Image (cartoon, rainbow, N blue to C red; front, side):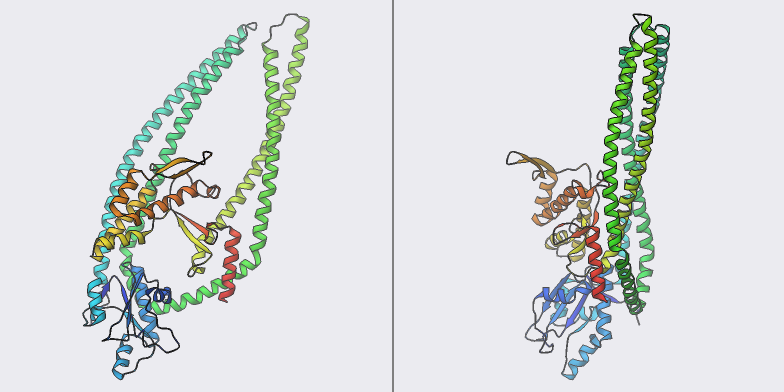
Length: 551
């Protein structure tokens, strides 16, 4: 008997449902493929084809699960469920021999179905091919190897660029250090000159030198800051690529072993997972009922009170800064004014000492208020971080409560539609394998283009001569090339992803959530009914309702 890795399956992974027109009378007879997609949506098929003819009036539905390993798992799950229900392939042919068959039967398509004569065999030979799991694993390994080689090349070029930028940074830093030493030397010289000649008004010269020094220092610091940001961005990108390489290498080594283990323990895992899921949902419900309302009200009230107090303290701080500045100006004037009469000298000294004393008190008060403001800012920031952590945890756990089309969903903002590219490639290439490979490469290419921060295919237009908006530039060379080469459907998919990502980064919702300077695909809790980012309260309420219904 052949091992599981030598068994030949129809690829793309395919399942067969038979006797669809021989169902009980109380069930409807449907020829629409969308009906069968909805009926078997728990197995996540990508396409459904209804087959029937006069020679075989019972009818069939061919379910296509795609080319990925997740599709294989869903196909085997369908086969197992029908087999456990005694409506598998063997049961179907035995019932036909007896001349009576009730209900629908299902199984995974293998070499016997592919080589069979009749409606199903002819259809499978036109649409698919036979492959063993080891062949599919080897092809997947080859594709990942090509991707790894490409990523290694890009990492090398990025490392070279980072080295050049670090050298430039060191050079600028040394130049800035030299410039600061010269400024210190000139400032010491000015202080010495001022001590030798009290009758010379040196305030304009000092002010000019300080302003010039500040300007030079500011420009140098801005240049270094920009260079450091570029180096940090490149380092982050390098780390991301390295992590991707590590994950792909681990996946390549463990994939086949994991696949065999999952196939052997499929039924036990399904039962165990169902029990754990019900227990987890029960725990989540108890936790939500205990903490949901209190937590949201606490964070909202704390943030509102803290922000109001912070705004009030900022106003007092600005007022105190103005008073300090005025006293400093008065002190400068009193120190630089030439004494015309000896009698007024002592009086001026007393006034200067009083102002200096008052100035020191104000500076002390200001430092105290600054410490209080910093503590308050820290509390506000901690509240924001805590709320954002809760949001990210919801994004991580929410998918297990989602089923079908729901009001609250996880939406990946900026992700290009792979289905659109697959349809385009299928229309251009009749070979399913080549079409699938081409669609993956094109989808990855345009996803990379969308996330390229240097590409900004938008233009500014005026609406009714007043309001200014940014819209897609239809004359952008890349978009024109995409439209001409791949057609309208692929063009719309790329434009839609660009608009979503652009609108999200320019919205208030993106503040304090993601780094707006770096373009990336962003998972978000989404209110599909209102077409906006969902609040934490909405997500918690939805999860609570779902868990209650599942009980």
